[in-house]
Image 1: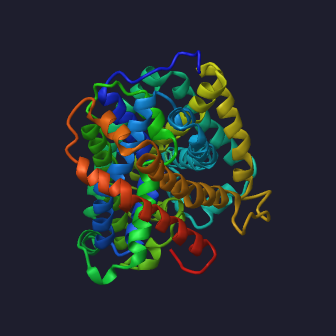
Image 2: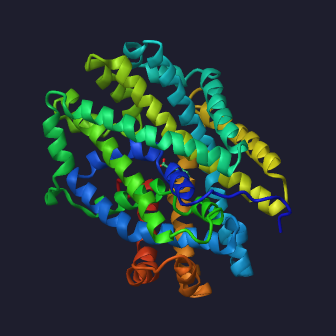
Image 3: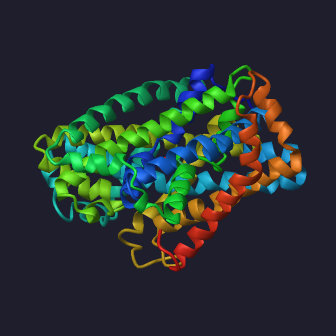
Amino acid sequence: MSNTHRSSFSGKIGFVLAAAGSAVGLGNIWRFPYLAAKYGGGIFLLVYLILVVTVGFTLVTAETALGRKTGQSAIGAFSSLSKRWGFLGVLNSVVPIIILPYYCVIGGWVIKYLVTFASGGGSEAAGTGFFTGFVSQPVQPILWLALFLALTLFVVLGGVEKGIEKVSKLMMPALLVLSVIIAVYSITRPGALEGLKYYLLPDFSHFSFMTVIAALGQMFFSLSIAMGILIAYGSYTPKDIDMEKSVKQVELFDTSVAFIAGLMVVPAVFAFSGGDQAALNAGPSLMFETLPKVFDSMGAGNVIGFIFFLLVLFAALTSSIALLEAVAVTFQDRLGWSRRKSTLLSAAGAMVLALPVALGYNVLSGFTLLGFNMLDFFDFVSNSVLMPVAAFLTCIFITRVVGIETVLDEVKLSSPFKRQRSFTIILRYVAPVCTLAIFVSQLLSSLGVISI
Ligand code: PHE
């Protein structure tokens, strides 16, 4: 095993903020609002909330417990419990390796927008073609992505307690305050009320099977399930921490930010577009194309845009920190590299992999894999294939191979497990079915059989 020193969180608040930091990210701020808008507003919100407290709670707890029990990152955690299942650790560990590069590319875009708004370029950013003009240059996006990665690296090199924990303690509360400011501003715009109603009031006629599938997929991505991250963070968590309570707090934080992000985005875009659904369905371009237009039309575009992209940057950074940490600790534990060496080499590797992603919008724009551009390809492989498969197998591993008691005992080390019964039922039956459903539906949608 590793001869290098493993660092750890100072206590409960360290775990909660760092795990919440990993969870709260681009997924909450651009993905959640557009999915909520697309899949029925209030009804999506309701389904999402139910899933978070059931399946989400179960999987987050199970992974954190596996990490804390074994004191190791994903690969070591699985193989120390069963040699034959070591591959599942590899599967979990590959996910952050794939996500980190493209996450940094998007993080670079966020810094570019932040700088643009800071220097009074709000109207420029709102102009049609600004985003395309920016990403289609070969060099500029690479410089911004390098800056984003450098910031991430700086924090991770600082260590778990002095780097990750300290930055999370600072950025997470700041993020919450900033998002409340924008949400209040957005809700009070003329015409925003209709959007607010659509977002908050469940209308059952908008319910469909796809509402559940979309909510499930979003929940996995948002809570950073099946990515080795929760296992790694669990391994840094002291044994006397009340795990059930901590997981609940992480979920509350993550879901609150997603909910507030919906409040920031849905009513504002509704007001701006006069209730036109199509404006909300813009998907990925919502944040970089529609929102700057919305901010510009509000009058105080530069200030609001600046605050907005600052909070997006905080959210993206705490997530990329978690991603780099998860990648680095894998090498640290497996190859016995020092923390510093594995962090530096992981960041260098991420930079190399990020290049084709950034270039996919210009020099390599004609190049596709399975019909996807590079960013969408990485996203597809990690989120639609590896993640559900890894989560499904984790359920099987815990319930059929090592026995659910292994996890239950770990949770109960520090406090009674109040939700033990529902946890057991969900891990045995509900979660495997849900993860399979995501996998099959994502596959069908990528083949064009259904549309998500
Ligand atoms: N959960 C993060 C988000 O919502 C994304 C993420 C994925 C972060 C994987 C870390 C690891 O954006």
